[in-house]
Length: 357
Image 1 (tube, rainbow, N blue to C red):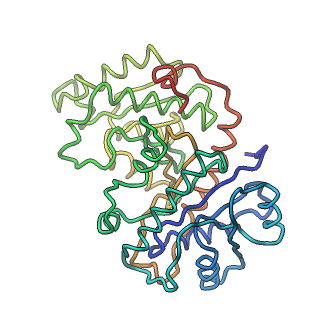
Image 2 (image 1 turned 180 degrees about the vertical axis):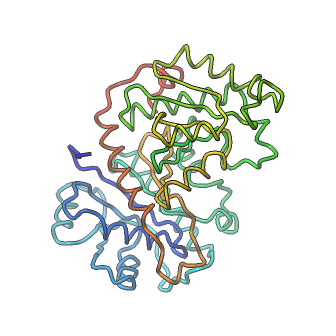
């Protein structure tokens, strides 16, 4: 999709001890040379230049200071440099392949910096290489992950996690919830909230005028009329019925996932609403072949991320596949363009919450 005005995309640091910076640099190396997007890396130029040298990539970085004037960014780009901005000092030596409290702190500071710039409208989108959740706790950060922290920093009350890949757009009613606890978090209200925000963002950010949505059941065979669980009868079906009255698009379900994803793979739906993590991510990761992208719905800016972790086991081997990161950058540019050109939408979540995201 052509971009009518260049989008400013910030790439956060990710965990420097993992593969995040590596795949970010490999993705930039594969980025079209005549792309209209302006990239800003939220880390130190010395760190990225050293890493680029190890990866034998002919890309070069230079530190800059705000405000990020368009002329300054363009002059750096023409001179062959990617601009970097960061406020913290970097260690002289990075030990890859294991969690480190100081490096984790740098990763968190980079996220915070990205949100600050986005809320000031100095950038349009944030692409976040992976961080390690266990490492966050060891470093003293009580953060569930990127999605929740970005929402907290931006003051976003309604947000959802969407995974995009292989022709699917999977949105989760429950995210990182233990399987034995999923049932008690499935409610009519929660299903409605998830569907409404998905519908809104498909219009605003994906440019789909009349989204086709499909809702998964929770139990085998979608409960089989209450014979295999009652969550469908008590919570999911009432939610779908209520949504059919308020959404101008098409909503189907609840369907058994084995049926739903058969038709989703053939392109029948624009998004699939899943009740729990693995229900949606197993089919998506199987068909996306390492190129899935995480998108946070509901934020006042675009956020995408590669759909993989820090991969400490290969972080010092420099052989990570950048496919997912390439797609995360591409999608960030596309969604930024769509959102800028999206007409106001008065239905769904915007009307119910009084916010446009």
